[in-house]
Structure formats: C-alpha cells, structure tokens
Length: 551
Image (spheres, rainbow, N blue to C red):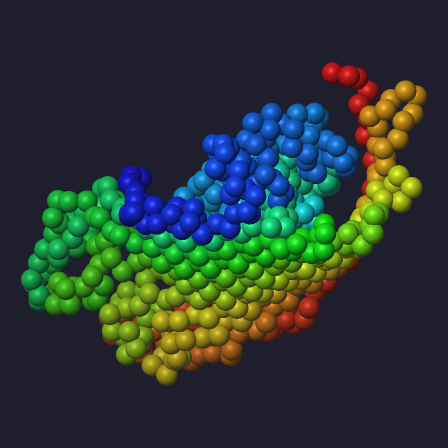
C-alpha cells in the first residue's frame, strides 16, 4: 500500500476565506454597539439563535431527534444524541457536508471510491459500518428522499441507494442531531444504523458570505518520477522479471498539485412579519479532479517484436484514480410564519445540480476494446453525470386544547443523466462515434405526514407524553434508455479494429456498447425496463413516553 502525504496548497488562500468571512458577515446594529462595551463571546449557531458554547456543552439545547417531547434536552435524553452546531461546521477547512460530518460524528464514514461509475460523483455515507440505506436522514424532522443511483460496483454500500448528503450545503445548517442507539425502536427499520437530522438555519436577521479556495500538494511515496523507458526503438525491449517494460526514474517520489476547490456561499435571514422568518442559502462549488495513479509499465502498442518508438515518449501516467471533477450549485430556502397564536405555517425546500466528470480504466492501444483508427495511442473513457435534485416541504403545526399537532406534505426528486465521452463502441469499428447519451435514472418521493402529541399526568407521573401519527408515502423509479449506438452490438470483429491483435483473438466479436458505461437498454429479458415502477407505503405509530424514576 502506498503512503500518500498531502497538505493544503496555500495557507494564504485559507486566510483570504477567513478574512472574507469576518469582513462580510452582516451584524445587527445593536450587536455592533455591544461589542464596544464588552469582549466578544464565542457563540454557536443553534436553530437560528445564538447560544453560548458552554450551554451547548452542558447539554441544555432542546433536541427534536429521538423524542417527541417539546422540552427534552441533550442532558436528559434517554439515549445519546450528538448535537453538532453550525459553528463547528464553519470551523473546519472542509466544504462538503458529508466530509464535515465524517470528521465530527463518531462512527460516520464517507468513503471516497474511484473508478466506480456514477458512485464516483454521488458517494454514500455510512453510519456504524452498516449500509447507507439503513440510516434515516431527516431535514427539519421530515424524511429526506434518496438518490436515484443504485450502487452496483465495488464500493461501500453496494446494492443500496442513499441520500446524497452533499446536496444539503453546510451553510444552510443550523445544527445536526445524530441518534445511533435505539433509533430503529422509534423510527423503524429504515433507522437500523441511526438517524441524522439536519435542522436548517431559521435566523430572521443577519447574514454571512464566505469564499474558500484551496488545493493539494501531494507527495506519493513509493511512486517515483519517470523520465522514460529503458530501451531503443526497434530493439528487443528491456523487461523486468514481471515481464513489463523497465522504466527510468529520477529517484524522487512523484509530487502532484491538484484538487483545487473554489467555494462561494451566502446565507441571509429576513423577517416575515413580527415573528416569522425567511432564511435563504446559496452555495457554488467548483472542484478539480485529483489523481493518485502511478505509471503503467506495460507495453501500450505491439505486445511482441521490437520496441515501438512511441513507447519511448508516451506519458505513462494515463490512468486517473482520485476525486472526480465536479461543479455544484445548491439553493436552500427555509421559512416559517405564525398564522395566529396557535397555528404556524412552515415550508422549506432545496434545489441542487451537480455536473461531474470521472474516468474508467485506460484502454491501451493494443487493447481489444480499442479501435486504432480512432485512438492510435489508446484512450481514457470519461463518465459525465448531470444530477438534479429537488425537494419541497410544506405544513401546518400548532396547539389545539393542549394537543400539539403537525400535518405536512413533501415531494422530492432526484435525476441523473449519463453522457459518455472520449470513448467508442468497438463493435461498430471505425464508424463509431466518440460520445454517447447512455440514458438516465430518476427517483421521486411524495409523502404526507400527521403527528400528534400531548403531555399528560397519570398516577402522579408528571413527565409523561402520548404520541400517535400516520404517514403515506409513494415512491417512483424510472430508467430512460440510452441512444441505440450506446448499447448495440455491431458486426465488427477485433481484427478489423486493431492490427496489434493477431491469432484466434482477432476473429472474436468486439465488445458492444459505449466503452466504460454501456447505455441502458429498453428491453432486458423481454421486459420493458423503462416503464415507471412505483410503490406505496402506509404506516401508523403510537407511543407512550414516561420517566418512571427521577434518576
């Protein structure tokens, strides 16, 4: 296993981000006046209100995860609940929500797979080492829809779908509550691993603007810089005991500079009437890819005979292994306004896009999946994913005769389109195109909720509550077929594509479909797979919560 040493590219860029944060954050006038009289106090943003750090640490913050009571705090919760305030999220140099939680939440992992098709760009997070779809993700206490991508390659979470946490920008979060132990007892089998509840920022004044730029200077230990190949054109090549070309090196470990990330985000809170609020967040992130691949010592051209002259000048670091290139835009809106003394209307939603580019394995010139007339030196096929994510939630909540009630409707949609570039369909030979529309996948969720609870007193037990509710959920999934040439098997044989391949292998049919990611076929096994598939779920619950001891 290689040891990789990485450091941030520039400390000055981080300082620039901190300066912009300090200089551009909007501060209410009365707060500015108070600063003249006393030293500033460190605060943590908790659900839109400023709470001193010692209050957070003491567990006096009211929580909504793992309880249906309105007065439960972290300190008296019957099960451990991690509360991550917004201030902790802002103090990290990371900008992706899933990576932030990876460093702040115990037992939450966010792997970074590579060469796993769409999973390169839409990465699942896991809690307690269980499947990504065994963690229930909530936003303001409401179920978040999962992504359309099914993880089918050799990555963590294979065979599952998961919520795309990075579609929730960190700038929009007021706090994060994480429940692990006993979550399934209250939330059902979807929460075997636990519950992550994102409470959105509900500040009704002030704002924050942030710019962050950084990158990586990486020294890949054990991968030495290569200057060329040991040998001369036309001569029998010098091979290693493994039968591959002997590479000339400088004796220095390879150093690369890549992964530059620019993040621009802004948040603003506006009052709606005397007590209502409207909080808006927008975030843009542009990230270049990273590459931790070494040099390929295999012969790229003819596999026999003298050394092809092109082997001497070929850039052998033609694989790409690392983070994909991505461009994200996310907008989150959170609002609430009292309609009268007992009823409040609330709504929140998000819209996000992500354009990503990741790579497959390099096809060498002598590979039977290559057409030398199109790519005489081989090619690196690219998978371009265009993801759109949308959600909206609206509801009413209030108090009626001592009964707290909440009724809501929500809709979520996630779509990903696949465009395969710098590739070919080898079975079509030299007539193949080099860019293919491989189809799309889509998932949607429509849901209605009713929750009712009340504090009661029976037999002298004053810390008791009764709760009940219902949920209806409809889910739909659909594939969109790719263009015909993205999956068709043409008539061309390998020998017609590639003069480097001779013998029996040259008469085999060439690989069908667009290389690295064949398009979705409309019919598989006589079944039309592009027809929408849907299911409906109805669930009921009832709960009695009581403190039977004072301890």
